[in-house]
Image (cartoon, rainbow, N blue to C red; front, side, top):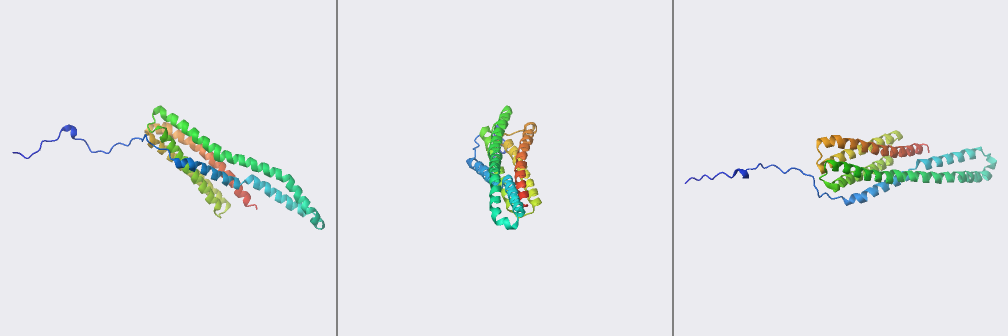
Length: 245
């Protein structure tokens, strides 16, 4: 008898290829981002309000006014008129200082809480709505996960970079240059990462990336750059006034 075995059925001969990567429909929304985002926004708010250029400018102007007023007083009358002059200047400058703090506090809330939260929510709604046109197999959780991770990491990195640059004892131009480059680079990396994350979550093809993803990337990047420039202008004004003290 022959020891040869019969060949296996043709239907059982299949190439051993790895399974194709498919978008996960069970993507979970990272809960730590829900705490990291408010923490990053609160930290940025405290950073801006503790470096308040308008209040510093008003205080600097009041100090200069006191200095010139005291110099104008005759030396024999300095002991009598110095205190009333200082109190008079403080009386007139005080309301402007309080108004300046309130004004800058309002701007800080706008830059660190209202606008970031609005852009996050609006971007998620618009992007996921557009993705639904061509199909979004990753589901809304895939979009939310990409947005939350992106914004949380970008805002935490922005806060850390700004705090580091302000803490370093560098020259004014070095601080301003490093701060600007860092803020812009963080946003560029973050929004590129967001496009890649959305492409993986929803298996976006080349056409959808080119005609939908890139325009959305450039638009959101422009808005993020405007916010970064506003923050940079705020901190640069504070650094410029600090050099005058």
